[in-house]
Image (cartoon, rainbow, N blue to C red; front, side):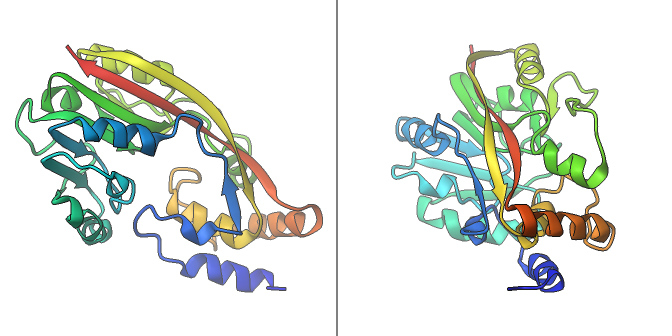
Length: 260
């Protein structure tokens, strides 16, 4: 059996680049949304002429489409992910551009008939509308308000469940509610044609999986470090040793919007 210190060290050592979650196999599980984002993306990409993936991470999801349109582009803000994304998306002939999450998109007006994003940190609804062609669609799976709050509350104490909404009327962030996202999409001139929401069961089987998850998904416990939360991590490790997995629920919503 690994000791508490060994597990902490393992969770701290795993690289956090990209959005490949294969390391968690056997150590943590998360129920998948019923709508199948990757399948929906593949269906829409197959009948598109130009697709843009915003905040692509390492390009892992876009890379799964079996039939790519003639034009494929992606943006990413975190430098370590850029080369991973370029490598993963090279078979699609994709152009991967460095762009800050809150910045204007570095593409001309009406350039894409499909814009997609899985778990974006920020959504600039005005910029999504600008780069879409008339009749084009935006498809996104987003992190909803209160996602994994059980883990947040365990480490930080009870926290209010509030949507993280910036003052810009055309912007939402991870943790915004589906209602707020719909309102801001419509304010930017998009028509929401599909909206689905689900709470999905997660199980963490050891403390290493908790540490790696919090290092990778940085908005769950802002500013997380092992040293800052060592005492609470030790208590959680003891709980998991005696009672089994720690259970939390991720909040997800699928939103599809069109430009008229």
